[in-house]
Length: 165
Image 1 (cartoon, rainbow, N blue to C red):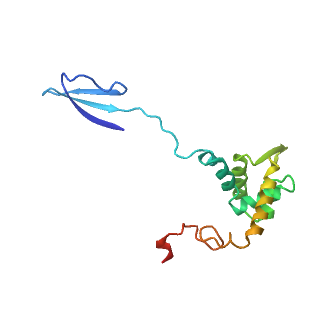
Image 2 (image 1 turned 135 degrees about the vertical axis):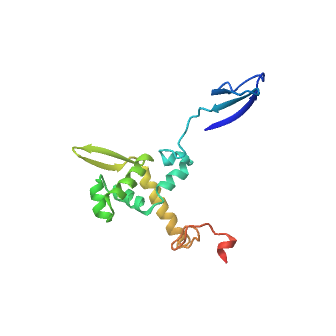
Image 3 (image 1 turned 60 degrees about the vertical axis):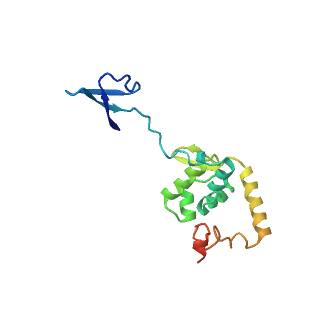
């Protein structure tokens, strides 16, 4: 980004932390082109879970039905992406992206054997969390599925006065 500043000859100081190009003019005005050097940091983190509170990141990683199905399948033992593709009826790229999300969140780990990678749950405590969630769902009945924000048939949009009309 380049900005043009006008400096009168004899004025003290120029931008010290920048590269400047001076162009002298006959009327005593100096044009200084100021080039600020800046580091560009990515807006989106490579790890999506790093932007969230750890507890929110855990539940967010399990919020997708496909990822939840993958976790439940891995509870039965190691599985390859190709096996999950067949069982879930999804594209290989879709299953790979979901497994990568779970791996990035530390819930799944891979074991290389030849040209295949066998994935399994990295923490058995995850199954305890899911078992407790099943108990909670049984206790609340249909209340969660009737939730206007996240329940079955919801649009996912927050409920506001404008949406009620």
